[in-house]
Image (cartoon, rainbow, N blue to C red):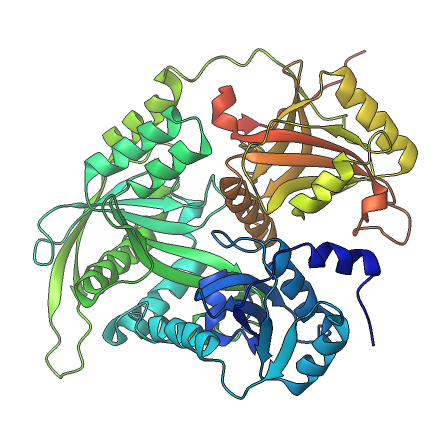
Length: 540
């Protein structure tokens, strides 16, 4: 039987003990997973401790199903010493569990702490919490109304295979008129040619489209960009990469080269924020608009592929989804808007924030043969590395808010090259910012995002390229942006050794030789537009 160290027991005995009764359990996540974190797998388990007298959750952990009983004890100790706010540290008089194995295990672990561990078949507070989550889940509306579900899935698959983003940039706006269904014009923006995300935005007003473009150029912080994003007024179709074993794929799965792409629909509005479902009226409009876009792009593919798209207007009859023998069609007019395209492109060149770049972009900072990974480390590990100085060099920022994980770029190389890289960054004034900026190769037509480090002297150093045609790269960047939003833009660069050893691709804390805390920004904040690959000629 495993037991707590004597020093730990002495520390726990110093925590005030009260007469409260705590409930503890280890439950399958199931439907609760999406409420805790949308990225969690429902195959895991949740370890939870609730104070019955207060009705509050003191501690909760998500663990894998094959974790040992030790995880139950670890969560319990945290519930005593470092509970979720507003609870204060406390030691309960009694603990109730409904698993005999957990009961006997905790009796051995908690010997000498004057805590009774009892068994009960029912845990009312924990059962009530899980029941409330299930009720919320079952009360959610479906993502798409049943009448339009299959049809919109089919249209999403057609768009994915037709790839309109190969001919339409996000500045090539289309106008759609469906007078029978909606009084205002719809303005179509196709994403994917110069961004990491693929999809179609259907703006309900021209002002919303223009305001967002101006705000995206003007706003500086992650929070301001998020506000501008949520202020849009549009319906959207987006595509997301999913794990192959995800049970929720079902008929949504679009398989391409072993990569599973899932389309999802929703709406953005300044008063609603982001909503990931459509009602029947919205689904009808979106279905008709997307069908018209498909036909328009097929008919005028060559014209839309030109650098300067001409004025084109075409009308279509689109049948509505119907389950009776008398289908009804609506008239739809689709038009290109070359003048609006020119106006949007002029924002990039005329905006006050677009300044001439007066620094060099270097490519020789990161050693050849290095492994570069986008990920994150726990805040606890970051602090342990910080306390490990001088063995681990640590450039710290004044991060004044509590975070759980710190987004990290990990560069793994050999020990000598890692030391040289650390010294080079220090000589350049340390790490200032991390950014990603779109680029393209005018000769091959390839587009990508360039990952760059800005050092204290203002120079930029490329550390990786992320091609737009590789979905796993798009997914990695999407996760990076989401993680940076959670930390208000704080991130880190970690230099590690061990690229040729057993820890290749999975560096351990002992391999981490330097941590540089920095701010993540957008390339537009440095005044960069789309960067082009230019040939270099060595003339002797």
